Amino acid sequence: MLYVVLLTIAVIVDVLVALYAWWRRATPGGIYLALLMAAAAIWALANAIEFAVLDIPAKIFWSKVSYVGIVNVPPLWLLFTLSYSRRTQWFMRRRVVLLWVVPAITLGLVATNELHHLVWPRIMPDPSAPGLMLIYEHGPGVWLNMLYSYPLLLLATIWLVRVALRSPQLYRRQAAALLAGAAIPWVVNASYLAGYRLFPSLDLTPIAFALTGLMMALGIFRFQMLDIVPVARDTLIEKIGDGVLVLDARNRVVDINPAACQMMGLSAERAIGQPIRALAAQWPELVERFRDTFEVQVEIAPQGQPASPWLELRISPLYDRRRQLTGRLIALHDITARKRAEEALYLYARELEASNVELDAFAHTVAHDLKNPLSTLAAFGDLLEQKHTTMSSEQLATSANSMARSARRMINITDELLLLASVRKMEEVPTGPLDMAAIVAAAQERLTDIIDLSQGEIILPPTWPTAIGYAPWVEEVWVNYLSNALTYGGTPRLVEVGFDVGREAADRFPNFQVRFWVRDNGAGLTPEEQERLFTPFTRLDQARARGHGLGLSIVRRIVEKLGGQVGVESEVGWGSTFWFTLPGLDAGRGDHLAAN
Image 1 (cartoon, rainbow, N blue to C red):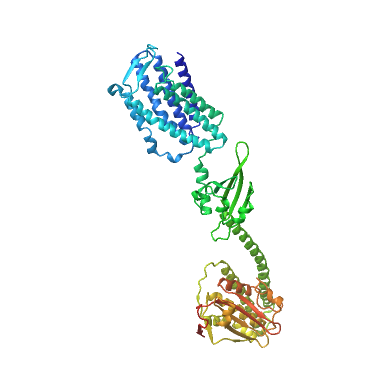
Image 2 (tube, rainbow, N blue to C red; image 1 turned 30 degrees about the vertical axis):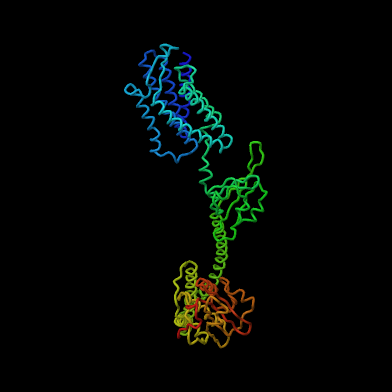
């Protein structure tokens, strides 16, 4: 009866562990542990009933039932170990099904033993306990199951040992509890099958599984086996994107993951065992700097190569069980994307700040420049409203002419504002060869009023070089330059237009830029005034300026967008020469001219 009591206790322990594991089945290994302990409970329960009944056919029946638990324990133990150690890549349906081929055959042989006697060739009563137990002679079917089961158990044990060796102390205790739980029943079972038995007819393996259940309970409640499970090294180290190196006390590489190999251009076979100084030749200063550093976190800038990444370097000390320093862990995290984002954000902030400054100047300039023609329109409008009945025809014509000029000035300001917006927003400019003679003629046509008012003379070259650009924008450049020359020129207004191509231009602009210029005979500019030119929304002489402050800012934006440069040459008393460059059509020749 003691045997039945022990088996009953084993069933209770197995069932309790199975129920708890089923409750925690969402955790890695939980569902397989529940099924494993359920199989062990079936094994123990069937053996207890077999011992309790007195009828020989009933005993044989319950012995067959016990095999339902016996054949399921090894594959379930293997699956639990694989799940616990996160070997999830093994869990394909076909592979799992194949694990039960031999168990299914064994169960079939057990169920039909009377036909072939391959499992139990002979069954006889135990003379030492008549009427209580039977002695089963084991045949090929039993040995087939043993030859299949024990390799599975050995494979599961090897994985547990690897987990124990590679894991922190908590996980090692978990693995030790699992190993102890696995060893007890299989040592007992191996002794039983080999004939080394305390009682000839008693299989103590189901009782030993009660001890396995207790060891499992110890792992669950004492070491949180189903709460904290070891994540496989392949997941944490081999497959992460960060580079990881482990150095010993002599700065030799003892482990390295694929990400670190890729960053350093190495193979693991070449790196293991080598000094870090020899492997990190591209970072000699860093190796020297952190040679004796055991804990640090710094950012490493690209090391001169075009594809070099930004890296975050972390160094952590490694200790043994006695807290003796044994080496260092080096982690390399690629932060290139973050750095590029930071740089883009910085540039955007700078651009936004510049835009805000420019917008403020823009608002003041537009308000000032629109104020004058609006004031003129308002003044003449009030005059006409009050005195149009008493004004002569000449006075009416003069007022109308002044209002028209003011309206045209406002239209010009609006057009240039729209042009400035288009220059800022257009990303791809449709450039091509320019007919500069036609472009300059169109600019002169737009400046007819200014030319007539200033009585200026514009001298043009007989031929023009062919440059590359966008005609509507280049026309605006000429309009601004010629308008300024006619506005600020001397008396009489004399404006000369020209270009530099060939040796003179090549010396100054080696990438074959054609230099176009407009020279006036005005008062000239001081160095301080020249520095202020092309600054957004400024004028040199607000008092005598008939234009507005957008012109040269637009010129600069247009020309730089087209790949050229702008500038001025001036001396007080000798006039000014405003110039701009554009890419030439033929980089191999400096004399490519088109007739005017």
